[in-house]
Length: 223
Length: 249
Image 1 (tube, rainbow over the protein chains, first blue to last red):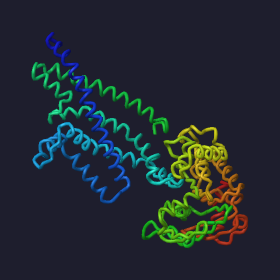
Image 2 (tube, rainbow over the protein chains, first blue to last red; image 1 turned 120 degrees about the vertical axis):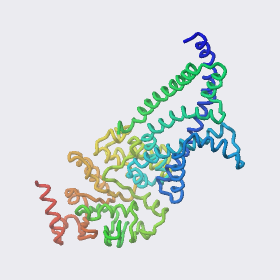
Image 3 (cartoon, rainbow over the protein chains, first blue to last red; image 1 turned 90 degrees about the horizontal axis):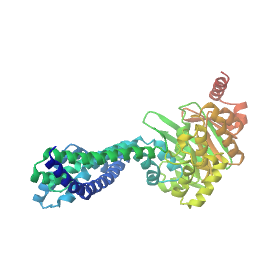
């Protein structure tokens, strides 16, 4: 590699890392929190078979899972203003990523809820606990454990997915790299550098997932 | 103390599981419900604790009368606060330790303070001989131990009656004794118990009354001694002899 390229990488690194920590990670965390809230609510509605609402949840999951994320971003950011709904780029990204991943996570949560033995809820009733109390103390914790690998998957995929926010003008790490590259034309080196930063961070998340799974297996071994 | 009248239950239009069951329980009674599988014993118990909703029937609990089909949620909660239910497969909360299994219903369902709940739980766990395993999770216990914790979970709330749904049927043979022992002690202490069981020894020696069910109906009910020594109905006789034969082989 030429000395010039090395110098460019060295100069770019702090700028990329800065965007990673100030934009990519906060964007991921906010989107993931939103997705998690949506997922738990949607999964609980379906688990409880609440008429009407269950149907709406299925429609939501159907539409979101069957349209591309990129199209959803364009639709909200470039499409909605023509009917008077104008959102800034960053909130748009949080909203779209959250709603999008929420649909996938809702399915993971629903499966995990349904995997909790039905006797657990009955046992709650029989010691005078209500549906919601049993849900909170017994069913949801067990479901989270079951869904943990799938939810980790969603988190990791979301970290990388935030790079799509670049197309609606959010200057996260990848867009920063594109901007720098526009000045210096070192595509191979720069994009490799970006890829390595994603790789490093997602590797850490993978290790955290292992650690978390071990923690969660305190009850029930490898059930 | 507890009386039910004319309880009917079907799961679909063609199969009626309970065809008009009457049952009366006085304080201190230990009633064994016997019968071949599919006779509706478990369904009856689940209807009595409202895990299944009966199609019709009347319940009188502590002097109050309830329509078993149309009963309100708050009435169900009120009745459940005076009862405990022990399941065939224990149904301990899998994500909770032994102690938490016993205290959870007290602190969250009954709004008892943490320290009171812990005292009540320790007391109940001592009675079933599980006070030395309070930090274990259910999967670390044998079936017999899990069932004893489940009994403690019911006991801790100081219920007026405990329902047992085949409490030893899922246990390895060598573990049945420890659970039956706990149940015998409870009976001796005067606990009111309604027990669906296949344990003839328990029905004969511990329970004071036996109810024999077949095909959704009560075929015969009698004091235990009389039931075993002098069964009146032909179906009862053949059931008892088939069970005894199985015991010998």
